[in-house]
View 1 (tube, rainbow, N blue to C red):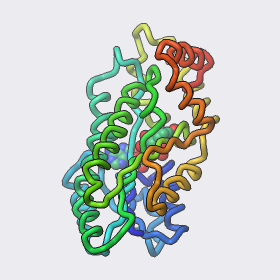
View 2 (view 1 turned 60 degrees about the vertical axis):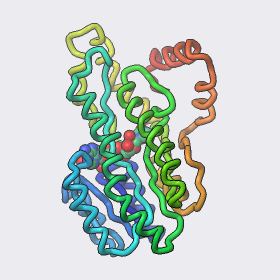
View 3 (view 1 turned 180 degrees about the vertical axis):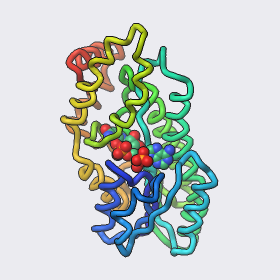
Length: 276
Ligand SMILES: NC(=O)c1ccc[n+]([C@@H]2O[C@H](COP(=O)([O-])OP(=O)(O)OC[C@H]3O[C@@H](n4cnc5c(N)ncnc54)[C@H](OP(=O)(O)O)[C@@H]3O)[C@@H](O)[C@H]2O)c1
């Protein structure tokens, strides 16, 4: 298969690029900086693209390079950021950025790639799809990460809606929702500490590092999520909502509880410096 995969500089995107290449697929992998795909550039089946998912013209220029390479079978929308902080004090530019990257960025990449996916179907290719990397935060909203959650809830809605719109054209759209994964994403989000400073949430700031470290320590290896993405790509009828998480059954159970009980459980975890 030929696959466009966004955000391969680190984490899940990098592990997925490596896994898909090892499985013999052809990868167009995007980063924001050219040096971030240098390690993969030597691979014969790899082409690096440079674009920020918030820059429509750059996405178009990147995707133009795929056009000449034969049919595109799949897009994996993986690029994402995690903006954290109390909703009360979060800066407007930060909460807008969360949506610009995770939601509108993913939608823009899908829109720009869809003509190629339609063309692949029309030329007789099967198993053509979009995979959106969502999160358990797209199912359950936790304090101080709820703007990130909102972006992933939006991705879940877009995934379901787009799948239903594209059904008549034989293009599948699914989401893969990991629980905590050992990647730099929460560290990269440290910019938002300003949201905790000099306000009634400042007591939380001291605990943020432990909070992040605990999420990382208990998290999955990125390769586990990469394996789930590979399977969903190769499977002709994958489950459209996949939660990839240690004790994922527990998260699903919590979701079935009354909201006030969910609140208590989440509060108890937070007191233990745990997000889930
Ligand atoms: N780690 C977790 O616990 C976890 C759990 C559930 C879901 N996820 C989701 O998994 C996906 C990958 O995250 P990760 O954990 O692997 O984090 P990561 O290592 O930080 O990777 C995120 C990737 O997205 C790229 N990116 C960020 N902003 C971008 C932009 N504006 N335009 C283009 N690319 C951009 C990053 O590039 P730069 O290096 O240039 O910033 C990086 O390549 C995200 O959608 C995330 O929400 C992560």
